[in-house]
Length: 92
Length: 181
Length: 228
View 1: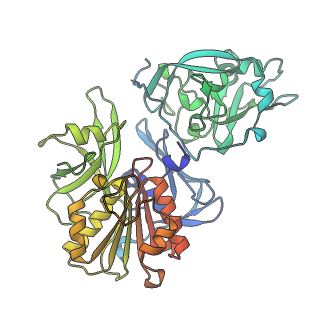
View 2 (view 1 turned 90 degrees about the vertical axis):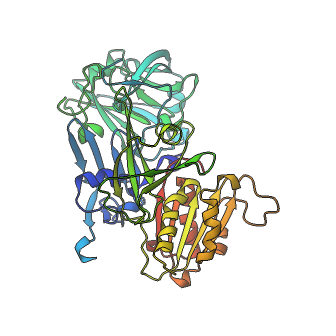
């Protein structure tokens, strides 16, 4: 089994992120704090089989964000995201 | 079985990132940090070390447990043999950047190995090969895949999952899954 | 209801369903009697506006959820779902840009929702589906796709393991050369949606970029290591 088999993309994190955020983040552009590349979250690499959901930059594999849900809380780490550009649903 | 666990016959692959693939000629295992003389072994040197074959149950924090898994590897105690240090903690560091932290006594006391063989076969990359840490008395995220060394520390430093809400110690028998449990 | 030997479509009545967009998915969670929980995502097969939610599920050999959904679920049973989710992998008519759909195996499900949406909206945007299956018997929605030509949607099949008698079409995995022939040319400013096993998605997305597609116009959804 290759990494190419287990890797998913931001679509796989949509449900979990939807529990935390009022706006859909899969269309948000994320800028990687590691390499500076910006992609839609839906296009970034997601590893969802782990003890938590890990979002990594598709260009440099830097950890963008980690979401752990358990123990009565959500734990969200976003130190790998330099910024997010989120389309305003009201402006559509 | 520890509380809250479910038995499985599979060996699920859980990963936080791409599977590292390091050529064995470039692989090394090191003991670093608060140690007078850091130690390092090449793959050939590491494979030449005496090993133990052990059978243990393993418990993942995601609730699956697998019984009687068979591993072969080098006891961490022998890798630390003769090391003089005031350190009380270790951080295991790995290809791909994964880390996990443990009290030194949990790895030096005969309950931890660096393993390279699973069920008689070389450890597959998706399960942490060529070598992973094995600490079966704790949740399996502490058995770091793709391990490249142990850094001895006098201060405890949370590793990857410990920094994202998982328990600092991780004892399955006391169900220490999350920080604060 | 069964679709192929390995897939079945479920029809769900969801109270208070807020509506969805073509391409979105839902998350299904099963809780066993002993408390064990497993969760999986399934793309919505139905077009927006259909009275019931349609999911097409492929039964995976060692699956924890799909065998239950395909083999055990009975009319009247209840399912715990979350959604709809996803705003990245969605298509709506109105841009006028030709739409290339590239599917591997069960990846055809969200793309079929887009196809159905186009039909229900009486939209005439050029749309084309390139669909990779192992054998002709594995084609999901076969009859419906055959009829799609009557609505202006060209469906191009490729069969990677076994082909129909007398088949003169593609008989290999999707690659850049196939896309160069089968895809709308970049000069038409098409958009592309690629869905299926991770490997196929990666190869096809790279292939579209090699053909000259604008990276921002290629949307992907990876299903992981499933068959196809």
